[in-house]
Image (cartoon, rainbow, N blue to C red; front, side):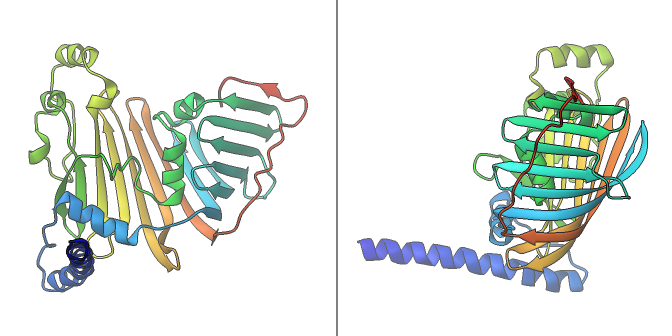
Length: 307
């Protein structure tokens, strides 16, 4: 009996591997002939992504960042060190290379200090100030996903998704509750990957609905994967409760012994008060080396409650 069970299990595992391996090959031939991607369900998309997901424990990298916001444009360089699920450390410098700020994130705390002349201060607290600065809710896992090339908010164990094809990509659309259909006028099964999600209700009716609904119930997430490599190329979140959205794009994926990792990123945050765009590219990266996270607040710095 045990041998039969093991035999059945081995066939299932082998079959899953073969299906996952053939999906990319089959799609490559289909795209070459001008045909669409093979249809896969959500579990199949996740299985293919699991097979290629980048694995890491330590990352050190140097990045070049450009920020465009209603307050203006700025560029800087950042030295980033990360221990998975433990710490994220960043040292920020302008083009001349003199450090102007440092940040240390743990799963439950944020520490930051600014060394800019005339604006020297430090902050120690939770993620509220960081979320306020970005104008979108952020936690440690979100920042780690952004920098570590992991799909933000993708719940592979308990998430409920619908799979769609979009040109040369697969999309996973998060299922949502009935309240969302009333707000945007379309249900999740009719939603296409590129649909623009706008409020369809008159202002007063929307306000009444929002007052009776939790903010998480009006959050729609979508994740895109390359149809051949299953690289996680895009995440998008539409926060209908606060009428704002976040889109994260990853590109220029390169092979390594740990998997494929993107070298270019951009984030677009859209709100009723204006948009913010962050773009960065990696100039240098190293995996698997343990790092220190030096962080000592300079003396005589003013403590503030936000950035």
